[in-house]
Amino acid sequence: MTDLHLMLLSALQGLTEFLPVSSSGHLILFSKFTTFPDQGLALDVAVHVGSILAVMIYFSETIWEMIKGVIKTWFIPNFKNPGSKLAWLIVIGTIPAVLAGLYLVKNGTEELRSAKLIGWTMLSFGILLYIADTVGMTIRKISHLTILDALLIGLAQCLALIPGTSRSGITITMGRFLGLERRDAAKFAMLLSIPTIAGAGFLVGWELYQQGNIAEIIYAIDGITYSFIASIVAIYIIMWWLKKSTFLPFVIYRLFLGSYLLLDSYGYLDNIIK
Image (cartoon, rainbow, N blue to C red; front, side):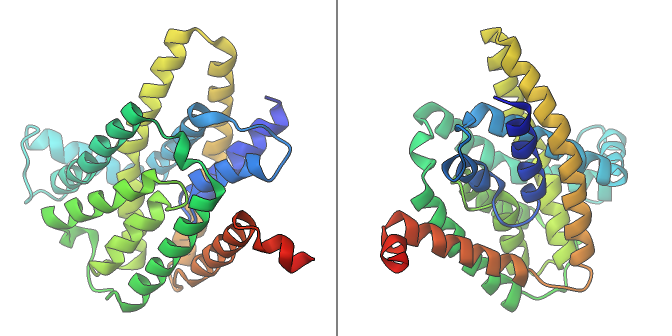
């Protein structure tokens, strides 16, 4: 892998991770529509780690309040303490994705890395995001979330294991259906990414360590750095945009990209060009 390939890949991941357009789908498509080889799942996970580091920096005050709340309540679930409550809601929301992720690790994921599948998920979940953002009320904050809400968002996050769905997109979609304000839906989605991606990153890192592949480890560290920088930019963009605007631009992008992928995958694009 060249340095240019790594930088482009990491920048792509960082910019698309927190926008509801599917970073994993874009990482797969990157190799399919360029001359660069497929980087594989291990590096995909590595550049995702850079993204969660960006989340931890951006929401450092919130994370610190969660830590203080958990310690103050002696690590016992306490939903009267705001910090403790949010921390345990994140834990609850993470459990479904962990179970689903372990199942996929055991049974393999290569069949999910196809442009046709990404086209369908990009299109269908883009429409679902539009519906949720249109009909969903904006009357609830993160502090209003219940255990059931966190569980539902966590179950929705499982769908993000299918490339093209978008982890942030599907969790935001569920949040909007539950009446969360747009910025709060995006914030909870980002916080929910921390344990999920951190767990996947640890497993991949441990695997690389056991293999003793120094080159891959170096690539992974560089990827994390580049992705971190791009992710910070993306977080500022989405949080700034959602102050006054909707998710419509991202829906339109998904519809166009999904339609293009499906036309290309089924051979209709060649007929249209001819």
